[in-house]
Length: 626
Ligand code: NDP
Image: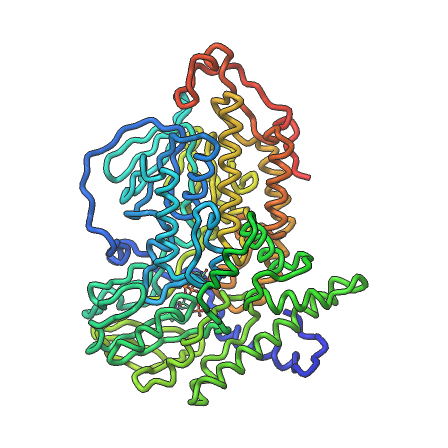
């Protein structure tokens, strides 16, 4: 955020000061330490309300690829592996079905804020037309499950199954994966796609365990208590006083439903979200059917290009994510310096903020409430929200907003909560308090134990070390799909499908070369880490002046987050790096231990034979990243 920029009707200096003042109210010394995990006495918050507990006999099997995660990361890896002819794939997930975040997040109003035509993958392959330009959670989950069915991903899957650990067995050259059902899966390759927002968090405040009413986190919505489903209809709340804590992207979507159905709704706000126009409309069937073959990938790439300011001639999506950025791009001329462009972007951001704040004034009748609902930070400090019904909720008589001015809820009592010095009695508390961001958490979701018993958590104590975010030295035949040292953009799906393609390419290439063990060299790993860290200032520049939130690790960016966080040059540059690497065709940076000729002929890839002498590829001898 810059203070100076030529105003053109916007008092940028005043806005700069206001943003700083609002941020100062929210900075907390304890950072992520302010939150509580759903462990110990809070473990029951994690229980899955969507499926009864599963009892089954343990399974013992050998597979070529085990994938942890039945969300979009695992689905894409599975689909592209299948397309590459690799069928012996076992997907394991604690969820009872495919869908990942869309399996867990079924709260009323759940929907995707990224256009359905770029977010819902494989539309052409599946012959599917999204119902509207933004898809609901159930529509996305059904699509995920249809893809999983079509590509046979259910066949060998172990759902409702939590992995206890994944351990590299050196003599067998396999990953031994054990689960809470007593299963043992021996896999040649282990692909971990455990998700970036899969650890829900609660405020670390006193009293949560003492509350005598009903409470749950939005990612474990209890429809048995509220009635209704992801589309609404919370009929059982009509005599209930409900409080919701949090006003992030999730809360924005479920609050209108809570307001409609509860006897009374109290919203506890720490920081308001910026709520832009959504403008949802049904899909124009004629337009959709007129799209030429290959249209979806072009649209996905165009969306990514516009939001990451890569020069393009047109803005195909033309929505709240892209429109203003595309317009700003048209004003960039070749003679502009980086500082000039920075100013232009900041001015665009300030203007967007002003438009969004003006919308609050236009909708919310009570002036004080309207002031409370205005967001004072740069647009990408928190997830931009798009909703056409949220603000109007505060015109309802049965809704009270408690603006805690950045302080948050103070404590939970046996009968309710205390916020902004007010004690409020309620029957139900909904925690819409978000998730830990995968790359910044202090350990992977499961113990991953590599060569010599070293855990990934130990290896990454000072931050991640990978090649392209996928390969880790000391962890052979292991691939990770995450945003750790990989890119992250407004359309998560774009990255996930590219990562799925890459995983399939690597495993197929290793199979074709009859490789028994593949491991990134230390040198190649270090080169990627150096490259990644050199780009980290691009991310920290975006986030360091922001009000705290999970994007900037609650305001605590340091060397560790720089190493573990997303790739600074963005999705497009990252995808290009992967493409170049694949095109070179020599698996540069991976040390390959191949089968000898005899066992290559006699052994299937899933059951490799004896080890040959170590045979390094050309690439592994010079793994430097350009
Ligand atoms: P967030 O982390 O965005 O929001 C958590 C909310 O809880 C914030 O408003 C936070 O306030 C508030 N909070 C935390 N602690 C306290 C406290 N002690 N007292 C009061 N309030 C508190 O989580 P969400 O679940 O809303 O969203 C997470 C992510 O999920 C999004 O960023 C997005 O990536 C994804 N998502 C995507 C959607 C889509 O359309 N594709 C829709 C919904 C979610 P503060 O801001 O001050 O920290």
